[in-house]
Each structure stands twice: as C-alpha cells, then as structure tokens.
Length: 476
Image 1 (cartoon, rainbow, N blue to C red):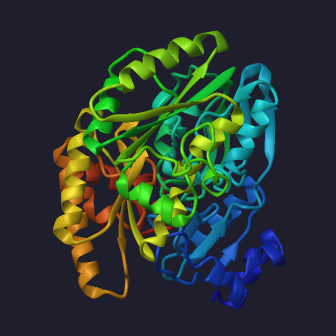
Image 2: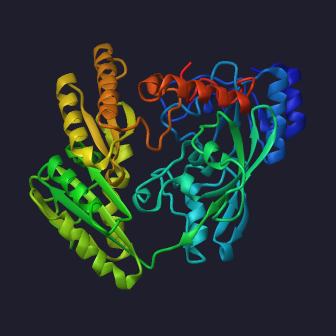
Image 3: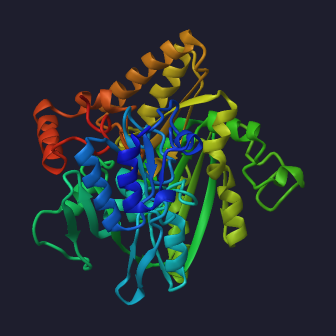
C-alpha cells in the first residue's frame, strides 16, 4: 500500500475517491482475465488527459511502476499489476469527445466501450469496423493497446487500420499528439501505428480519433458443416483465392462443437429446446459434422446475391455436409449464437484454458489444424481450436487442471511445440491478444536479436525509467 504522503499527492490531483488503497479495490484490480494475481499499491482513476499526465509525473517522482487498465478483459496478463505498481484505470475516461459523420470520424477517450462506438456510428449510417469478441464490454483503450480485431478483420482490417490520430502521455511525462483527422497523412514518422499494439509500454493513450465507414446495406450469414477439419480448411483456402472477400470467415473444430453442446447452447439459439426450426433438425448440425465454418457477406443489397453465389460455389467441395443461409437479423443472430458462446463454453471442459491466438498463412491452416490435433493426442490434452480462419488466426485453447502437476507439465511442453510449429509454418505468436506476460518468453524464437535490441532502445526513448507496464511485451 502506498505511504500516506504519496497517496495524498495522488488524491490532491484526482480527488480522494479516485485514488484508492482500500482492500476491496486493491483485490478487484489485482488481476485481469489471466490466471494469477498481484495486489497493486493503489488504484488510480483519472478523468482527463491532464490527470493522466499528472499521474505519470508523480509516478516518475516516486519511482512507481504503472499498470494501465481498461476493462481487464485481456488474457495474456497485459493488465496484471507487477509488484510495487499502481494500477491506472481508464474507466472514468469514457466520453465521446466528438462525433463527426460528415468527415466519417469519431473522437473518443480510452474508457469508451468498443460496441458503443459502432452503435453510435450506425445512427448516421456508418460503422466502426473492428469487432472483437469482447466488444460488448472491452474498452477501446485496451483494443488500441493490443491492436484488437475480430471476425470482420478479414475484410476490413484490424484496429490499427481504423485510427487516424492519438493523444498520449509518454513514460517520461511528455504529452504527444500523433496523426491527424484526415485519411491521408504523410507528415513525420508514423507514431500512431507504433503506439497501437504497444500494450501500454511506450505511452498511455488518452484520446483516439477513429475512422468510420459506411455501414453495409445488407448482411447475410452462412453456416457450413464439414465431415473433417481438412475439408473445412480446404474450403477456406478456396474462398480466399476467389474475388469475393467475405466480411467474416470463422472456423470451429470438433471440440468446439462438443463444448457448445455441453454448455447447453445449440447452434440455433436454443431451438433444441423448442423443436425443429427452419435452419435444420433439432440436433442443430448435420450428422457427422467434424468442423463448421461461419461465413458472412455484406454490401449493397443488390450485390448480395452475387456474393452469396460466389461464396457458396467456393464452399462446395469434398466433405461438405450442409450449407445453411440466414437472411433476417434474427436468422443471422441464430447462426452466430454458437460462435459467440465459445469463449465461455470451453470453460466447461476444464477450469483453466491456456489461450493462444496464433496466426499462419491461410494456405498453411490445414497443416496447423492437423498438427494441433496430433499434439492433443500426444500430450493427452483436450485442445479446442476456433477463430478467424480468413486471416489464418486460430484461438488454440489448451484445457487443463491447474492443480494437476503432470498435466500442467504436459501443457507446457505442448505449448512450446505449438509455438515452434506456428513459426515453422511461417506464422506469428499473436494476431490480436497481444504478448503481455504470458508469451514474451517466446519472442526470441520469432524476432531476431538485433531487432529485439532496437525495440528495447525504442522503449527507453519513450519511457527512460521503465515505469510503463513493466514486465510486459518484451522479454527481459
């Protein structure tokens, strides 16, 4: 706990209710969604850019590490405190600073809920394209820190592709403005893209100017059942080789389907409880289904039939068991129910999931899925794989019991093998979840020593004393 004199300085800056050291608050902010916890010295709740800058300067004065936090929904330890640190929570910085439909932009503080940005944009016929699975509760600041994405990334790109400019505070207290308000910007170095995905290790983002785009007139979803992972991955490759780019292309393996069933949510939004529906039999999926693809197309209403025809043609092939299409919003919601329930559903298999969001080239996806299946058999572990197949981005969940030492040891061996396999296939360690504390040990396997040295030197330029989110992103 902070000494009273130091706490008084933060309280003078923020107000006594926003500089907290009570046991309940410290316990609540001692962890994110990652296993493990560390009690911080204090939790700070700034409400403006100026207060964030003031907090950084006080932290420098007293040599206090800062752990920035949004909603705490990350699962790689990015928002877990380190010993002796103070948590700086952005949840009170939740204002929409400006909404400018004429110029297709919105300016927000980091504590704004991601989904609320899209909801406001759609009132003017626009949309904010990035749609992470946690969008209903995650904050835009966390999305910026991790360069979050979601299903629509296959067509519209990731968070970094939708940011025009930032306001931030570096680790030495300097106040920064990067980028601007225009879609073209070639002045100076591109610090905007550098800060996005830096996981709060270079600067604390206090404001973001985001690019909006026209919302599609119509959206159609397809659910496609296959007899094997190989057949589903072959369909993914066919889709990505033809001209029509889907707005989402999601993959679920057999264990994902089993997890949904055990979770009690059918792939047809509970039609199992009400009998047969227009989407299929009461059991939901075609008999013999081993893998499912969720495919979405959007755009001008008159162009949707052309897109659907092209996608259906690419989806047809060896191993296809069933193809269903949803057209109304209710039908689309039903088709997506299973996919949206997966993050919670897998927790029914085992109490702890070791969650990796690896990425490989789409042409190597089938090899990765086959290798993961072999790893599960070899190491006697249930592994659930699902994710954004159109980007080659799979969420690989090793389901384990943390009190079983032998199982945990096998999981560690399996995890290392997974990382080495992904890199051998030309992939990368993380597509959207970041590195945090959990993956940084593997960075030297992907990034060359000279490049890592340059990254460390760059980090010291922004944060000479190393107070911003220490122990994250880069290996020691």
